[in-house]
Length: 297
Image (tube, rainbow, N blue to C red; front, top):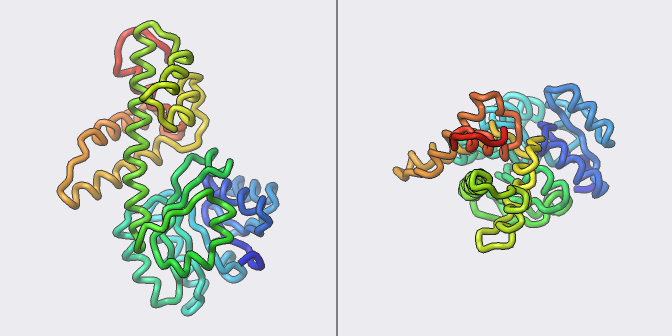
């Protein structure tokens, strides 16, 4: 696998991190993004940018997709990769996007007869965590196919969990993100509550981190909330997209996620306030708005 470049479709926050991890491990990277600035950035990092998705097809045995939505994943594979590859290529596609798991499973079923092998591989961790080597892959699909790309997985991730069939990686990711998002919301509300009580939020964060309420979110998002540093490591609008996926999956099985409904409402308010491209820790801004009274902006 190391003799062939890994192709990446989508060079945003996470796509660039995947490229940096792979290049750092000595694995060549080719990549495409619709934004020419992102393609130029890949060249600066030592990768090879190309001008269209089709140009990625021939030299790479493994194609990693890191785009925003299920619609985009389907479009990339069915309208760009398949026409370029033709039938019987045996290429391996790693879908690192958080998608609708039912649609991803259906997509894998449609492309398997055409010779594309597909792994559902959403990632747990912020872009900074993945860059530091703390990312976790949640894999759905054939274990034998995953074994073929183990050097790629080892270069990017600290740990990999094989969850089950295609779609199960996405299902696990949605459940993980549900817990993670509610942790962020609880942290934001706790910090604002402490602030309103007259406590210094930075000092209180250290207390919370040393208490029974401690969580990884306090390490990754707490300092950003306290400093008001909302440079993105996971954007509000992407978190909202994932929340809607969770709500849709829950509705399909007749299960209500009542606390997630509150989180989604907070995220939607942030988007309406023009904060959709900020880090998802920016939910503290909406928590402050809803809490009333004077306080930090």
